[in-house]
Amino acid sequence: MDAAGLQRGRLTGIALKGEDLIDADQAPRQLSLDESREARLAAETAIDRVRDRFGPRVIGPAAVFRRAS
Image (cartoon, rainbow, N blue to C red; front, side, top):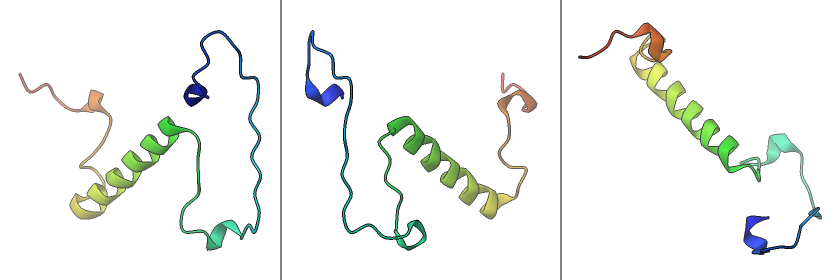
């Protein structure tokens, strides 16, 4: 919607049309229009890879780590 470049007008909707669709389990990647969701998913994948390599306790909430003064 930002790409529409409207200064004072309102864009109240958007329509998508899908043709020749396949089952989700056959698709190599699920498309998304939400950039922040995509960023979270990329971070989640990276965290999973780090945990697989270095162990499940290597990444956790920042509150449980001591300050590095």
